[in-house]
Image (cartoon, rainbow, N blue to C red):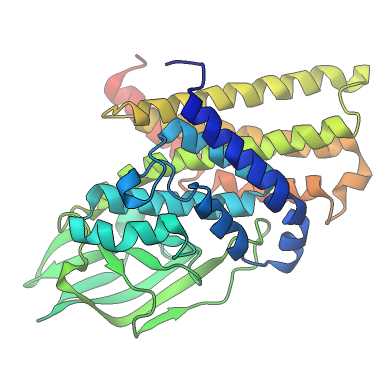
Length: 375
């Protein structure tokens, strides 16, 4: 792994930082108070190429690689974690379409995601009764004479009320036999789709999170993405990459908390200096672990799952701890609901939950160590 950034990686990082400093960071607290979905900022991210960082140029992406993507998410999350998660999910959905889609599917949808024509895409896997246990989903797709009929409910769907495309996982039934879980491309405007009210969340208020209900939704036969019955494998591969995105988001949150604490004078006093230095060290360790997972994915490693889980576990735990400690060290003023440090404490909490809880990451890591050893 080369620890020096390439010119392309530095360029992507610089453009993300510039955009965030000018547009995203200044309105973060206002967006949080109003729960305003960041449509204008998402268009700006798309114009800068950041809605498809690791997607081929022929599909409208930057083709800059996974390390560059991680650096961009870190920068955006430092400005506003809610914008960063919307960006990260769009990149993840775009990559799934670009990797598993047919030529027609890719050409039809991916450029709309990278260009900003679609404000975002949604990854529709979780359900009210199957979050961590994705294999236990109840949503079902049944073959019809012209395609498929989908029935079921999805929960906690990022950007669900604004997405231009849904990727929907469902149990599939063909001629009375169940081949397993399959993945479908679904147009959000189809009849039979109901969008629930925005979830009233602890943090990341400007990120839209809703439930989706599918009631006899008819989709064409060519809406299957990848092989029939192989959808669970696609979901797990996508989540490995998604965990790099959430690890990167977590690092951005920690960076923002440390910067705010530094501006408040934390670290200058002997009582706080040692703790503050250790926080910086832990954030940097999480950053390097995340960049290594990104490099492994970018290098074409056949299995970066353990490294992605390690990065997501460590970075999310560090972000929560650092945000809380910085708030405590700054003092009572930082505990006000509209203080940026209080916002970061609230924003950080969900990083330990989505894209696989910290408990699930520990299971993934342990299983891989048992199977493959520590090397």
